[in-house]
Length: 629
Image 1 (cartoon, rainbow, N blue to C red):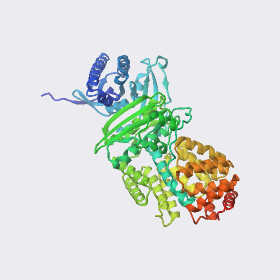
Image 2: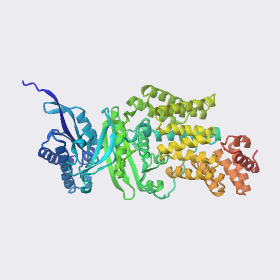
Image 3: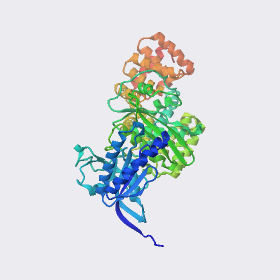
Image 4: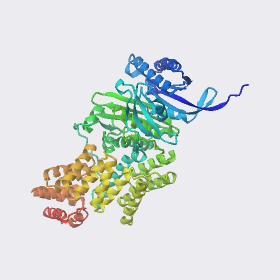
């Protein structure tokens, strides 16, 4: 028996797979098998033509090696050209497109098989490529020069799974006008990371807490969502999108937190892209559990594109579907089915986000390179504990708040460098005030501040901790700090509706209501189905600026959501006085006393964070004229 020797060598690795293979198989197995058999034969013939060798060709994957990078890329370009011609003869739903990744790297050769990181990098490049596209590594690019008449687009340094160092990635451009050009600068790019993935989740948590914190400090109870209206908003100038809640396909209500969490992660990843207009989670989740038409949702939220999907989690597997729909035409821009190991949950979220961006024809330029989640060492167990903690926070009661903090503390023990658990703990300390579980409110706020600052020390680009500090500063009447932290939130997340809400409130209480109106309108446009505290805030800004009729309209809308909310009712009373409607003011004052028989004008006004005393005195005078004491 001849012993096979193991040796190392430098080679060009070619890795290809079918985009949307699972969907194709699910639609028509026989036709898919026939097509892939033919296409694999075409690829094999071309690989051999360019002096390559097919190493493996199972399922929808083709792995090959070439002695020359030039040959590998020329072969890949010809393959994609040939397959485009063949696909044109097929119905769109049956077209089969391959993604190809090429890397020049070191491999271990054992008989006819090759192993090593060189293969892994080629596979990761393949997953970054568009359907029908080609991505190559920096090592392959460095060997090409102008030997092939094509162009390249630099996609930045990407951190990919199971590879220690980031790799430079280039997308090939076959348009004749791009020949010899390299688009994009070779410089370090700001990356999305876990901080961005969970920002939207934390903003929602803070909003939930905000509603009840107002009840303690400003006496505003929780409010329900605004009743759905059939309305059509003007589309923003750039691409606009809403991500509907992914459907939990397990049938187990206890798994809702998982599907909701994945949806929010995708929303937040998209929200970090400055070119995109992304609807807030609060508004899109108003459709949860409802049978909806995409065109109607798009009109109500004022967007062109809608994402919808489903999630099914088992013990070790993750199955997801996702599709991007152009509501104007009803066309499916992109659709994909995932059947992965549960441990690949992080990569799947990133992949969906990237594909949505590419489907919208946005280029991954500076500031838009998705980094996989190993920026923060995080196990699947830690991830689940964070999501469980979020579920407890959403429950909105004293017992669940205790469990949220417990899960977050356990997550810190497993992933001490991750900023999200610190945000959850900060929120839980604030919620202790809400549920009357804190014997020392000042200490609870101090603990919340301390936890948020710990999160910032770990990552100063994590939005959730800044929005927490902005809210706490506003509670304390520290207007300049609140404005600073709110602006930081918006800088990091240009689609943060709660960042704009807080900024608008801070300007309003600081006697700049006109600026407040500007930012509060932006908040509501990003959140077209706003909570009552958004409506109340805009009403407050209108009242402070002397626009009484508009203020009355906003306060009444807030009251429609929650008739027992003391804050909008009290300010409605004051606004009626300001507009000379004394009879309506006295009727509103009776409602104030119905809600709170012990209502005190002095106490109520003292709790408002006015920066200037004359504004507070104006409120006191109006409430007393309405008959309140």
